[in-house]
Image (cartoon, rainbow, N blue to C red; front, side, top):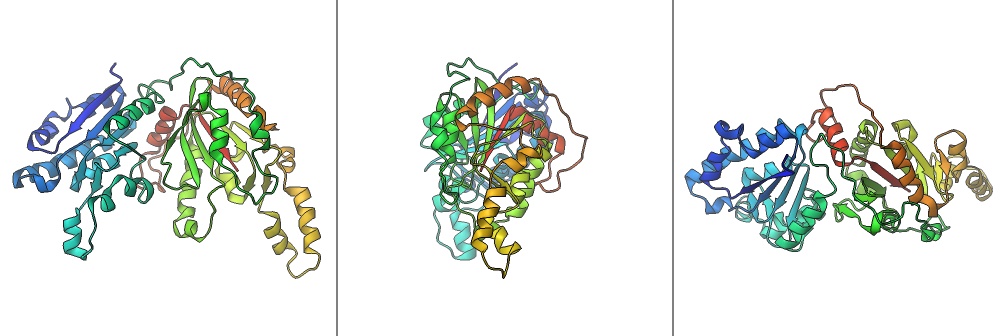
Length: 414
């Protein structure tokens, strides 16, 4: 079975004919769906301004077919888009429906209407780069997952990314030979988290310390920097990593950005995921953030806490201000609250945490647990829709996506 299918889009009348309904059953999308293998779509086409009137009509039909056809079979395979040139008009919906979208800096663009149309309608002066360039879509809109320096760099990184994924939706994630000892201790983790709970630290330092060969393929590194997401390997096994980033402060911007809605999606994803799930609480796990990030209550398989972990309803200062409002000696009450609740022991006593571990042993623990969980089998009741998704795909597709792409999902939180 072929590892992947490559489609090259150039936006002309010839390609419109190739993707017509008559030939769709013999198209790469259809073959990929039937075989379950991955589909890579590279777009390096002409803009609509470079097309004739007839070509524009055909290109609209082509865009609808290219987007609508695979959307009906998206549960069958993983789709990756690599934008290597201008992609405008209805053609932008095709990469938007794929699982991952990558761009090339300074040469690739994604926009529905170009700068000239924007100028004529809103009188705004904007360049192609500002409107739909790689920086815009990887740092502002979140449409693209990552941008690369040039075409060669993009293809090399895509090859590296491709190696993390299973060959098809019927296969397990690849396991490669590992020369990094699974029982390797990471002494630097014992002193990485500051003693003062108000001081920040970099979650990437933890991730790089525990994964194989310090190799971590981060997804969307410039967008939503309050969370770190990407792929790595643990003892040769592909793992997906989701971690809160304490370096990024929260505030009104998160509330205005819809953190409630997005947090609900994250909760749903962790609850529905049937892959092995391991949680490491490194420091703060307050309130809803504790529940959402793959807690025991969301079917987390193994949950560990570092000695620096704080599992509580909220921070000590805020809790004391509410409980002892208007009373004296709040400083003493805060110190007492910290001693009782600002530690992992209350959660461990209640069975919400399996063990309190030394940070330096984190890699060893995770690798050992992944070996035990490798044979895990779990399924969910069939549901028609995931109502909180941006386009409500079938729930079974969402589960398949998690199972196929992140065969093992390791989550770290503060």
